[in-house]
Amino acid sequence: MLADKVVAVTGAGRGIGREIALLAARGGAAVVVNDYGGSPSGEIGDEDPAGAVVAEIESAGGRAVANRANIANPGEAESIIGDALTRFGRIDAVVNNAGILRDRIFHKMSHADWDELIRVNLNGYFYVSKAAANHFREQGSGAYVHFTSTSGLIGNLGQANYSAAKMGVVGLSNSIALDMARSGVRSNCIAPFAWSRMTATIPAETEAERQRVDRFKSMSADKIAPLAVFLCADASQEVSGQIFCVRKNEIFLFSVPRPIRSMHRSEGWTPESVASELLPAFRSSFHPLTRSADIFAWDPV
Image (tube, rainbow, N blue to C red; front, side, top):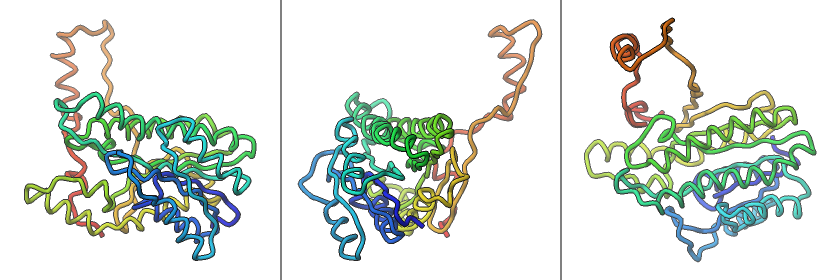
């Protein structure tokens, strides 16, 4: 499905990114495997997961190059696309998968926890996407696949920074889809459920939390890769601006915000009339505060 394509995958040294890189290579793509070898919270390590994945792809007869850039740095992010062009002559798809976690309950979250996560999980996606944009325009084709999260789409405790970044990714993807449609470029999001180094940081202190972790452990990262690879392929030409979710063998399509109620008052509104007229009319349509686990409460299938 990806014969003669060149795909760049960020955060591809482990977990979901690794599975996408391996499947893309098996599908015929040349792969830029990006991973700077950091910890789940973003600290620099001395490991080389990108190199290990490249060795695995090459040993199976595929083509790949390791890139160890930190996507939070614009210049380093550009090197990912530069490596694709230098080694393989083109770029056809970008998979923005890299991310870190700095979970804190909101009133205990530091400025550093906020800033560093936004730099990687949102700014980094922009930097990599921007680096590929003009190449996509010139060739009249290209695909972006961005990883979002149900922590942003629905909600979760202790993840204000992560949730905000992942909702920002949805806005970024939709804007790319709109702005670049005339150039034959598409952009989509995937919210994954999978056991990885990042989900391994989920607390498991209560029985409900332990059950949630057990459900995550049954959802392997390789289940996410097929949809991501499809969205990189020409077969997905009609698909853009969408938000998907993968949970083991289930694939979901998410809705996007649209008006659900309206109320008109010819003489205009006052704070008092909002309280006495609008609130009673809208109350039954307010959505409750929920977490991702409240919505996806059944065992994965």
